[in-house]
Image (cartoon, rainbow, N blue to C red; front, side, top):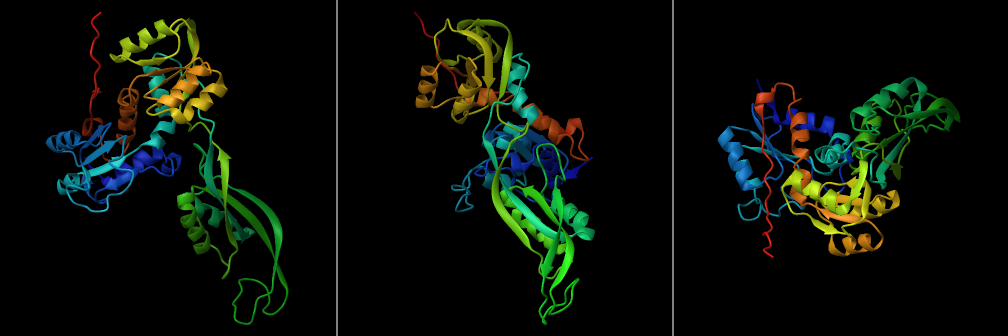
Length: 368
């Protein structure tokens, strides 16, 4: 059984829409031919040369990772400048990433607390989502066709809901000139038409596609379509989770449990005798979530890492920080990503290979 690279990407985007990613992020197909056939996929955390070697040895045509191979595209596609992308393309292996869109996905955000044995609670992130608001004035008879076309172009998705739109009826007035062939109305006469004001949000990077879809399905020669930059409240697709412990414990006892679960020595900010009742979790670098954790009133934030001054300020404000390592905090995302890949039509469970967690760093044991 097989699929295509595009089929793998579509399965990932269905589970973790690219509009959930940060605007600066690189997600989806990074390198490779979307039409190339795929019979086997390797899923891992990082697109390293070692991971690429494992993919090649396993006969995989796609390496799917959480981290993208780059954030800034290389200026030159040479072995020295393009990093792992060059040998991947040379070997016919496509590179696909699901990064901050996976971090925000409900299943992704719940992965770390589940490994910690905690019930994933409410989302931690409270930042707004930058979007575009596309407004189309369209005859009521064509409202549904235009809305459906815009939805296919990526507009109208709010969280796990698709095809979201709002329409209000009204009357449009216009005077067609002698050079026009109006859909309705009389040339050189003030005319009117019953219209709908159709509004749909769209990711800013897809606003142009939504406008093109509206125009192509609109009966007017000169449809009025406006685009405004807005921000909307995020739904469940938000980074981090706030969890309640079954019973309060000391920070020292909580850290001991975390250390045993992951087999690492965390770095701790906060007094060991602080009582911990509520825990916030975040994968990777979590400095941007410290203000949200403080507003949520949690006792401790478990994350990959937090920058020194951010952690120092958090501890001073009463928020303990437990840093377990960037990779350690994100390995729980890899099985979640693999489950999405396995949903690609034409692939079965045996076609999706998953790298086991590997900690890329270590700390020496201190001898007293």
